[in-house]
Length: 146
Length: 146
Image 1 (cartoon, rainbow over the protein chains, first blue to last red):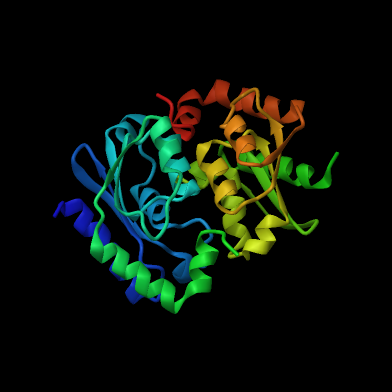
Image 2 (cartoon, each protein chain N blue to C red):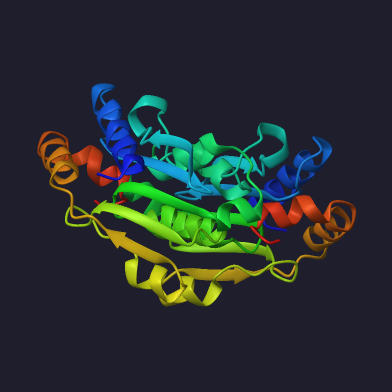
């Protein structure tokens, strides 16, 4: 398995062990792991620190050039917020663990020139299936659904 | 002037006095001011705390119902990230100080059902004009431009 995706899964599991939503992310710049993160809704009471956002924040202030030479990994299809952030910084490629649990604006990302790679990873899906069955309201809060 | 927009301008000025990018934001829920924020790129070394994101983070974890009864105020047209966040939480209305300095994906927001109100505010524009003239590289970093 892709080593950067493996770290994203480890981040998702770290989140789960902290009592949070099990979604993880990594950012790879110029072929090297730059940062990693996981959803912080429960842990930090955060409305904006989805896994991808936490990962990008952990990366710090990068140059436009660095973002344009990066790949964002995430265990779950990125939502409107995280997709928009990838567009802001012109991140050219997103590797997505699974998109069965949730689908972000994938067609829109493609229309704006972002390459999407789908791994259809069973472990990512199992993590979310189990979590959502136990905490449906928390999950709905995270994606803005009633 | 709309009192909630006035607070957003005060936030922009607060940012400027801190040495940061002068963009401010407020969130109004059920007709009451819920939170306020300003761009934190310089102050916190943040890649994701644009004014709107800081404001939404300061609001804390809201319910889907609260977001759907809210108005987001911002002194500058929201970028892809901040627009995506409004879409995630189904914020129905955004009041925008000006969109001459920068234009986010306004047509896309409208196509997704978001009401946009433009104030064409001279003070917001003057704040940005002066800031960008003094710090062009910092501004480009904030919007992912080389």
